Length: 286
Ligand SMILES: [Zn+2]
Image (cartoon, rainbow, N blue to C red; front, side, top):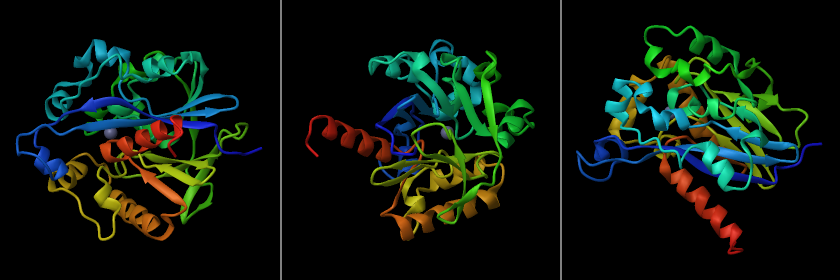
């Protein structure tokens, strides 16, 4: 039977501090440090925990060099043990083995770093993303870190298709779970990039991963800092598909904003708001 999950925790499992705050956030100095988060979700279901994306993992914190020279120089990540998903799972009183399922929006190094910390979890993703990461093209090589899956994850591949969901395709996963969770394919940033929709008691939450980077991209009228537009284009594998999906998400937000809340991986605005709400609820303020 489908109900809404007992709780959804919003975690940042990584921080990146690229230079050029004004260019990428529209605020601060030209050489100032921006703050990007790695927004992951820990969903408490009746049958265990579901983790959506994993940010950086313990190995990344111990050996940040494995993230690569270019990524370290441009994005200036600050992987730390305290911010890993596995540390935050323990902090909330759970064991890593309680995480039965991981859903990855895609396998970029800032989303898949925590996979080795949950070796027993089933890892759900679109088959197209797995193929792209296992045999990366020259262009894609820096974005995927083979050490993140050297332990041999229990991959569960899903295919695009599925049912209609607000004009998108919605691929139902975890049918035995009490949480209703759909993959919403959003290709462009990577070949098999997907959003993840979770039904809550008051509507849907759609984690859009890296389909967009800044809340202004899905506002009406859309607006985004110039550095974000340039970075999104630099980091895409299919520009036309990516831009089309951003436009579809903007329309979704404009038409169904009451029923569907959008968030993305790296904009701290969403994370700060979600964590603020979580704290308020915990203290009974809401
Ligand atoms: Zn990312």
